[in-house]
Length: 226
Image (cartoon, rainbow, N blue to C red; front, side):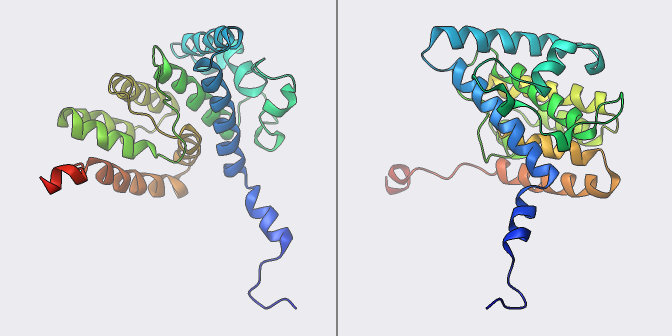
């Protein structure tokens, strides 16, 4: 017997397939695959991953609409698995006109930014579950408060290109400090920043996450016992 407040199986499926969740999962899956190949032990897939990241980094200095190789990597397969259909950006996220959809733009910015973040790194810069602003808070805590101005510039950016520029500026510093975060979550944040209705929610959560990341580290058990 189903109660008035029970959730049907159809409702559960629908909740799991919202477009923002598809975006997060698609970006996370693709980046995890590239990252795993890059830091794995197979020379062939390592070389392929390095080539992919080099193409994506090259795109960072261009207008996103004018780098077809980077767009193909974002929308299509990486060549790292046999079933490339599994790597396609879901049809629900793809645009229907000659302009990129908001989900496509968010995926593009997130994946290209990851390529910059992972450059010359042996640690995993895509860290599932860790929010971007938390990572920035840790960076400011461990380096210099002046870095906060870059975070503020990102939060105040209104245009997509300005957002991408300030994001890359922060990521180069995070790379130097070897601090990673979840790029799937970032992609969803980027998409939501493009809407006045959801932009404020992202900025409030970023502020909260930043403060949490900025908190001083708790002393180790051995230190407190000494």
